[in-house]
Length: 211
Image (cartoon, rainbow, N blue to C red; front, side, top):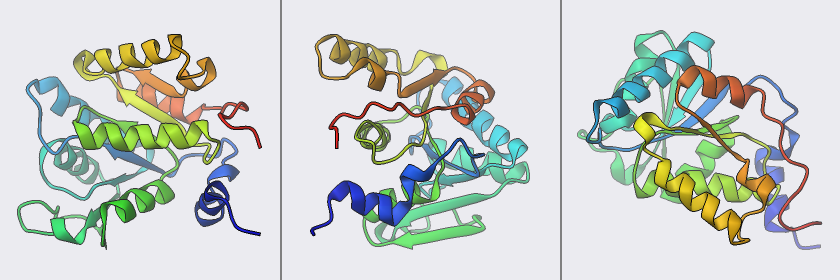
């Protein structure tokens, strides 16, 4: 019998076995720029400090620039552990974080996303652009399909994600996102509260396509 894509991810990553166990690693998606407001960099530093304080390892894109570099530096400065996952084409002196204790070089962006998802027990998006949104939305889409049971959080620094949240509400009203799946987006304005809610996450029993 041919293996379905969903079953393939389950077998490879064991995503469906999460039973409210303590999170050991969090994947953080964020911009490779600092952004226009100091609040964005402050939020990235806050996430890094809080991860280190809780003994939760950081999984991220392996860069030294923008918010990526800030969150990684904050983790390491406060005694935490950071795992960088970066495509080989981006392993250049100006981009890769050379101070990481664990840097994993992959061939493609697809491999990067898959490995980050495999390593992480949950996901946080800080302010960012196309890449940040694409990574977060892919995890949300796979969650609504029942392919994983890991929490997805938004740190809404300085109200950055207000328009995006409005779009999600509009999509739900128009029948493109089920109410239960709209609730998959866990929103907070501080790192501590967001991590508390990720730890307490209970995945929905309703999936987009019933087996």
